Image (cartoon, rainbow, N blue to C red):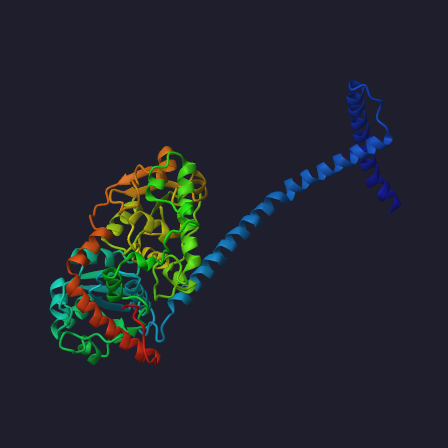
Length: 502
């Protein structure tokens, strides 16, 4: 055994001694060049230790490094797969809103039919589509003709057939649209719809739906056992929103009169539009926010219009379904911002155009104070949360930024990997968007695109229609609000229900 050890050990000892001599000669040469004393035994030992450690690391890297890199890559892939599965499971949980979900045979497509006027399309309609879609696998939406709506309700819709079709078609939960459906379905028409579109269930909100004579609009569907209901989104309806527009006034925002103590903090429209430098612009916008904060301190309702709709994080998450993808360096991100009040066909047209410019459409929804500053009066009709839900429901939108900076900065462009900034030819009163200071950085970077809005519909135009038919609409709204109040009184077992109208 001892002889064997000597045979194995002698070559190793000789190799170490030889390498030590080589190292000593190298170190002596370096020291001599630097005018230093020859290498000592301690310095040689230290150098040999460092060399041994370095050679060990190199050997490890050569033998095991590549294997470990493969392991790390596999771990990253496994992690990405688990995250995707978790997102999918969360989406299934979010979609599973109603008892008795998907009652058909396994693997069979379940086709849902929902119909309505969908006038002045809002997030309550979108939520009805979302819930109806969760009852099956394919949603067909019928949009009532203006003639049939006027015949049954006593007044035509505010929006035209084409405008309502455009917004309903753009909803991400709607798979197909049937234009010009009748407000009251006859047996013949119902047979045609069921046969042509292979409908399994007809869905409506849980509130009564009666025609002009007080008859149940869905009586025939109920007789066939094909009727299902979804909970109505409380706090919003076309009637309620039209009521807001009929009574719009500066008082809705609860902004206090200026006093000597807060007058210096307020900013006028000219302060912003006439700013000659980024600093002046930012200061003016800051003052607007400060004025809003001052109003909030003086009013129990804050500076913005009161809403009976209660926004929860869960509702925002449901409207974000499916979960937005993470922005990656390879994506071509298209960004556009605005008020997005009363989400309408004009908004749909520019978002559709933006989708064709890149891979990922990111939309900024400006806060109520900024929108009110530029549009005046009691704008916006819908508050920030309500407007965000409207934008999130659009199939051309990937994600939304709540209350983004009004002035797009280079830091924002870099952080969000923005490749294209879009604005339309219809600005709806929000500054000179193509040439204004808000887009200066995007313009200088060469990424600003001013595109044809392709639709003349605007919030101002909608309000003009409301004002032109104010007398007729006022009577209709007052009557409908009473009916809605009665429905929610009965649903919640309340003695009274405040509609928010005086």
